[in-house]
Image (cartoon, rainbow, N blue to C red; front, side, top):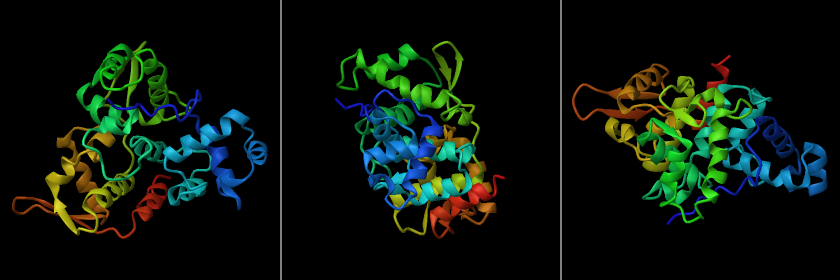
Length: 277
């Protein structure tokens, strides 16, 4: 059985306003290696909270080794108050991999914990679900006691439904009390989708200049489940990305191929913000 790996946040929900304070501290000379007392003063966060909000920021891909990640620097530059849907999707992208980031993926997404299981196994199989159905699905998968599962998974549900978190993405919507649906996500612009594809390409295809289109569409823990879309709708997004010069498609004869035309994925993230204004 797998471990949920959902205790990183203590009992603190995802709140972007608190993440912002951590990012500002991480941008300074001492970063988050500063003393606890100084970090508490800089962020206004209590003793128990500083480390937990740092964990949120780290899992969301914005902090690495106590300083801003390259992505975190771009976020702080373009979206100081973390109000852009680009930031919401970026945080979702990295949160979906638990604490493992863009490492070689496991055989079973649940091996990386509850968040990864939720995005890459549960949601694709359950376009509508209740809290109880989610919890009952998790009981045989995770080794934690059954009574712990609802307590920990509520932080994932809150992250995707609360305005102070990632609700703008509409990855899931609460359609009535404790009942949720998927399939109506408010997708980001094509530059950010291109950034996601580029990062996933680095993870699975390394420096290959071309891959089969089907390998992108069917990529395990790939772009389709990250965006919460159906495989057949990805092609229209690939066409939009091609129009921006991020990829080239070879579709004259089967099997169809995608050729990479980007240089550094982080440049695509910057363009996602610039072209979202």
